[in-house]
Length: 309
Ligand code: ADP
Image (cartoon, rainbow, N blue to C red):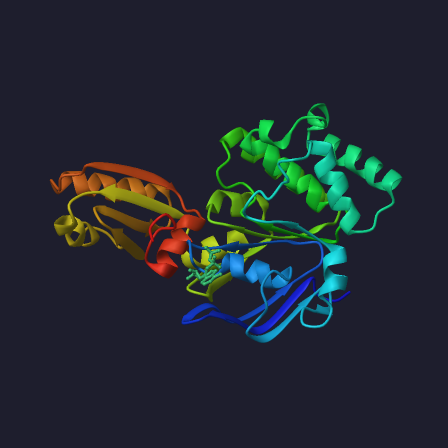
């Protein structure tokens, strides 16, 4: 089986902006692969090149072994797309949105109706089949877009920020459906700027910034390689940061405004450093000792947090 996605020195330029910069990537069939990065990193652009919304500027891109230059029609028949914006048709009911979409794939009406009914059940919207799209909550609309993306039984699902703007319960519902699809063998490529989403869903991910890959690996590998096991967040005047770092052997640290994040081997070291800061009389505004996350990986690699930009 060819890779689900293969990119070689893939670039995209919009005028003066180099949105994607010589990206090399291989996504395997069956995996859930994530693009994590701040706004403007080039995540959406990369997705759009995969599903034929925008042409590539340079390099090579193969989806399911097919060349995006020459075989986009064949690619579109075998992939599902959940775009960032909810482009549902407001003039149609929930069920009709699926049936109309099914026509693009040439599905026979009876097949389309059966699949649409099953998919509404899958995303928990059976009771809303006759409702107008405008009557749905944000979370329901997102689930409907996911159902719509599955109407052609795709081998590969491309999801651009599947849960942005949803409340926590709606996000968990979306995540559970995506995990179920993965269990059925559907390859998934998704973008997110939520590190918890990436950690929940992705087998592997890349952290991208300014069109380039900063790191690639499983969430666990990335955390081990780039952040270490434990973080101590200290809130204190930047003038005191150097004094804190002189109190213990801190393997690595990052400073963002009044926040100093110290990366340490374990909880005991984090507690010891907090005690040492107190004993030294350094005024602390707050502190938190916690296991490291992908957010720390990003902070270390890009020197800023995902929310900043
Ligand atoms: P992300 O999805 O990571 O937020 P995008 O792929 O949307 O990033 O954008 C990457 C860069 O390309 C940004 O600098 C953005 O302003 C620019 N960009 C995206 N789409 C267009 C477009 N249609 N025309 C011009 N510039 C664009």
